[in-house]
Every structure is written in C-alpha cells, then in structure tokens.
Amino acid sequence: MDNSNTASVNWKELDQNQLCLVIKGRLDVATTGSLWGKILKTITKTKPQELLVDASQIKYCDGAGIGLLLKLKQTQKQNNRRIQITGLSPDFQSLMILFDPGRVAESPPKRASLAQRIESLGEKTARLLRDLKDEISFIGEAFIKLLSTLIHPRSLRWRDTFLIAEKAGANAVGITALLGFLIGLILAFQSAVSMQKFGAEVFVTDLVCLALFRELGPLITAFVLASRSGSAFAAEIGTMKINEEIDALTTMGLDPVRFLVVPRLIAAICVVPLLTMFNNLFGLIGCGVVMSFFGFPPVTYLHRIQQAATMTDLLGGLVKTFVFGALIAGIGCLQGIRTGTGPSAVGDSATRAVVSGIVAIVVADGVFAVLYYFLNI
Amino acid sequence: MSLEAKPVIQVKDLTIGYGDNIVLKNVDFEILTGEIFTILGGSGCGKSTLLKHMIGLLQPLGGSVLIDGTDIITAQGPDRLGVLRKIGVAYQNGALFGSMNLMENICLALEEFTDLSKDAMEMIARMKLKAVGLDSAAYKMPAELSGGMRKRAAIARALSLDPKVLFLDEPSAGLDPITSAQLDELILELSHSLKITFVIVTHELSSIFTVSDRVVMLDKDTKTIIATGKPAELRDNSDNPWVRQFFNRQAKKCF
Image (cartoon, rainbow over all chains, first blue to last red; front, side, top):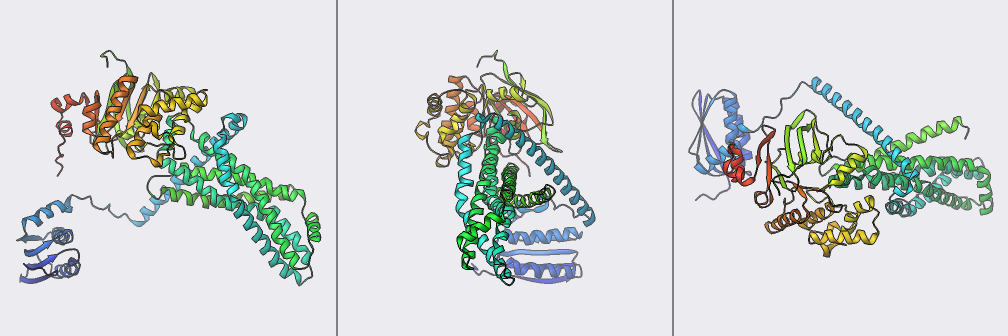
C-alpha cells in the first residue's frame, strides 16, 4: 500500500473539447492546497467542454479533497460544461453526496454599494432613534422610581444599597486619594516652574485650589467611578440578564428598576461627593508638598488656601458630583439592561457604560460651566 | 385530574414573533386545573418563545393569554401583580440570583410580598428546599451547585409563594438520565401533593411519557399547533406522520 503523504495530478487534452485529469495519492487538507490552484488554473485556461476526472488512484480523501472535486463540478456546471468523475471509491462517493453544497444556502447576492450604504444608514438611524427612545423612557422610569423610593424609604433594599456603596465608594477611597495627591502634586509643580519666572509661586495655591475644587476634583472622581463602578454595574446587570435573572425578577413580580437600578443610583449619588472630598483633600496635600519644596511654610500655604477659594467654589464643585453620580449609575444600569445575547455582550455593555459615562460627565460639566457663568458662581 | 376540571390558562388566537418574523400564528389551547401540560416541538419551533409570552415577559403580535381569567398581556399594576403571584417559573438554567445563597433566593419573594417574620420565612424556605431534596444545601451559593441541583433549587424558589401554576422551561435539558428521572418524579410528586398545574416546555420524550397528561405540539413550518392530546394516543393514532415520527424518535427525511 502506498503510504506516502503526497498527491499529484496529471492531465492530458484528449481533443479540443475534452480534458482528462488523473488525480493520484492522498487528497487531504495538507496536500489539496497545492493541487487546487494548479487544477483550477488549467481548467480556466483550457475551458474543456467535457472534463473527465480519473479518481481511481485516490488513496485517501477527506473534506478538503471532496471540496476540490465538488469545486470542479460546480465550476463546470456554472459554465454549462460537463464533468464526469470516474473510479472514486464508494466511501468517498458517499462523502460527496453528504457534502454536496448544492443544498447549502447561497451567500446573499451582493447589492450595489450605494443601495447598501443607504440601507445601512437607515438601519443605523432607526437603531439610534430606538435607543434614544429607550434611554428617555428609562430615565423617566428610573427618576419616578427614585422619587417613589425617597417618599417610601422602606421600599429601598437598604442592605444592597450599603453593599454597593461600600464597593463603589469605600473601596475606591485609596485610588481616588492617590490620584488626587498626584494630580495636585503635578499641577502645582508644573505651574510653579512657570510662575517662578515671574516670582508668582505663591499664586500656585490659588490655581490648584480653584482647579481642584471647581473642575478637577469632581471630574477625576467621576472618571474613576465611571471606569470602576459604571462598568461593574453594566457587567453585573448584563450577566443577570444573560442568566435570565432579570426575567426571573419580572415574573416574581419584582420590578428590576426598583430592585437593581434604584439602589445603585442612590449609592452612586451618595458616594461621589464623599469621594470628591477625599480627592480634593489629597490634591491639596500634594500641592502642599510642592509648596513646601518651594519654601512656603504650611501656615502660609493654609492661609493662602483660605484666601484663594471660597465655600461657593467648593460647594459648586460638589453639587456637580450628585449629577455625575446619577449619570454614572444610570448609564451603567441602562447599558446592563440593554445587554444583548452572546459571549461578548457583557463586555460590550461594560465598554459602552464607561465610554458613554465619561462623555456624559464631560457634557454635563460643560452645561454646569455655562450655568455657573450665568449665575455668577 | 378530574374530567370536569376548569381551564386555568386559556391561550386565545395568540400570534407571536419578532418584528416581521412570525414564529407562531393564531394559536389556541387551554390548560386545565391540576394537569401536567407539555408544550413540545422540534428545535426552533418557538416553544420557549411561547412560554415567555404565557408568563408575560414578551408582548405578542396579537391574541391573549388568560390566567385564571385575567389577561397577563394587558394586565397592569395590581392586576398584573395578582396574576404573577399565581404563577411560578423555573428557568432553563435556574436563573438563581448569583449574589444570594439558596435560602436568600427563596426568601426574596416572601420578604417582598409578605409580612412574615424572618423565622417564618426561613421555615418556609427550608420546607420548599426539603420538597426538592436540597435541604442540606440551603446556605450554598448557586455557583456551588450542579446543573440538576440548580434546576431543583429553581423549582423550590418558584414554589416559594405557593403558585397555582408552575412553568418549567426545559427542565431535563443537559441532565443525565438518572437526574432527569428524579426530576420527573419530583414533578409528579408535587403535582399529586400540591395539586399544582404544570406547564412544561421540553422535547425529552421519556419525560413526556412519564409525566404529561396532555401535550400540544408546535410545528416550525406551519407555525401553528399540529397536534393536541395525550402523548401515547398521539404516538399511536395521530393522523400527522411527522407527529408519529417525533414520538417514535425517527429521523425526519429531509434530504
């Protein structure tokens, strides 16, 4: 028995319209590749009206080999030419019947690219509008349930709320404080180097204080929470949706928004201002380190802080954080609830929660900037 | 089951689908109080989708599902809650709340809908767990349980508020024959002792013959019911060759 792992092909043109192919050896996934191009090229070149394939010397044939034979059949049929495969062993013949792609659905016909683009644009617009509608109805529903929970505090699942607040808040104190410290330090150092040229290092405190209290403190804290907890909310609720836990809640008569969204909203709204305070405090410490490096004693630094920032600056920043907290939790939960099916759905939801959360925070911050300008805050 | 039993669920002229894609059209059937009723059909014929419509999770394109006289599809507020209190659902993979142990899973509905003391709730939860043979796993998390245990725990949770109707979605899917047979016995036992009406979605023939009083068979091609009746009668006397083929476990000639 020929045990060699090779395959070869010989062909001869019997007359102008007839081509005879003799395929020999082992036609498997490793050897078929080299024959495939060679044989098809020959057929395209010679365009035989009748193709005779002598398959009697094929020792072994797997899916790839059958694929080659079926491809020859298909090519000849498409061009209204004939093909005759002879000598194929009965085992391989039954494989050919099993795999004959005549029954497999054809790939959908390619549309003209313009029509396709218009269709996809329409589809995307429709999806966008549908998403927008969902978002608006979700915001309305969540807001009403939040108000109803505030009116009837007993209906809140307190234990869940505290657990979420611990995870999103207490466990994030370290990272928020570290980021605040580093931002305060870097901001103070960068500005001090420039302001030193004008002998204005003392005003570094003003810059850092105002920047931290009004903008950086709330923003950085919100970004940390969006990436830590917004994604976690989306992943938790998304996994629950995939595991049919949300369906189970619904059929038990428990409202998923009241049960899952409201505790997260309340927890996030409570912890973001507290974390922002930590962030601000450690930012000031970071700035203080730089100021002492530039020779300002702590007393001078503290005095300068009191002069530079007012309570309005601090509270103006903190008010924003309530909205940021609501946005982060709301978007995280919405993306979780909208999780589709399939293995990548939860990951996609978590990603969307972080991206949309950060964008929403920055947009809201812009709105606050305009609002504060008109309110002279 | 007495012959004069009244219908507890009436599915009337129900058409279901997603957008333009109709899955089942103009489906009509009744489920009688106390019977074990099975919805069956080949893969992809819309069994689970029908179940989701019957428990009010999805909105149909038309028709109604009356549970004890109330339409679960249109019911709102207290009416809807009232209907939902009458049913229990055990999902295909259990759908147990992953962050809670079994005891908490079962006590959840009791906490939300009753004024029972913690002791009373725990007692009830233990009883339900005992009924499904999981009393020793009361404080285990769902992730620590095997597939069969999860399904039984889901039944225990669905029983927490003593529903009139229990819906089971593919209860024996993915289970070994022994566990599957144990689950069938549990269904029969609960049906006899608690007189609960069971609505089961499955295509496991052995389960159907063991537990079902009556079945409806759905068909993917005609998008409707092709047979209703007792499983043994359908196997032996159905006019529809496909139904006989299904019950006799023969491969459908589709080539």
